[in-house]
Length: 289
Image (cartoon, rainbow, N blue to C red; front, side, top):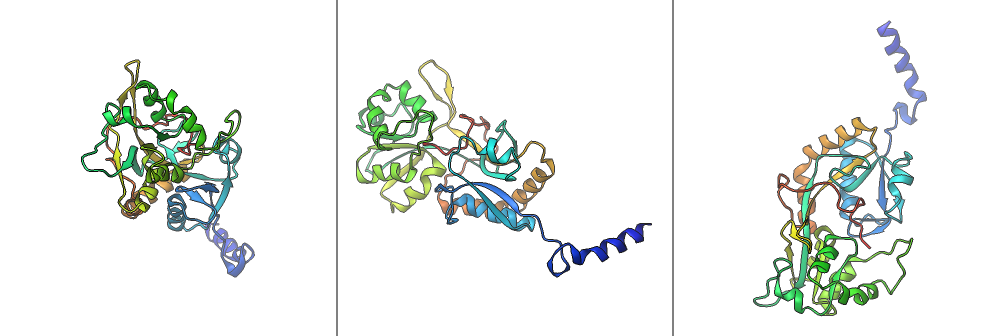
């Protein structure tokens, strides 16, 4: 009986695909169509390259399923089976299964390179005398600027970065390239950003800027600790244990190449075994703005 089944399978193969082979299922990736430096439709993001690496190692053609609004892609695409994986998810995101983390990074201060200037944490004197501070809402940066009394006087400037668009019930994108360039041009004295968002544009500034990782767990006004370092994973649907295992295998096998990709991007990498939070601080990907 075993040989009969094998014979039946062999005889059936020519009818299952062109050239007598069964075509591999595509790896469908939930991807932002305009969220550089992560991804875009032209494949210029570092997450585009990571998706290509994973799909290639799995022997599956890559198929991007594009989204425009980060608030709904899990509900409307991943959960409905329209795509299979998501790059760049906070490790431990409760909405899905997450792979072993493939990098850990933190929020950074970005400021013009000046002799003797060193902005190390939110107690730094420069933060109190800076006129304009570029940051994104709903991030640890906002929490700490409120704690040191620098949020209210930045509100109008923050709104100017997106043309004073109303944020009620809509997604308003704060462009990290614009925020970094605000510092380059002198329009802002300082930016506080998630390092993977900022690194490419700091690098493109050609040495004009300093990018310093903020120490983890700053102290907010009520004495509570605000984490600034997070680990990043690949996400899959909760019922896709086998796919998660495949992704974990690829991440382990190609770890050196992945680290090289991230270093080329200029992202400051922290030890994966660093103690501290891994789950998301906002419940969404770090597409802020």
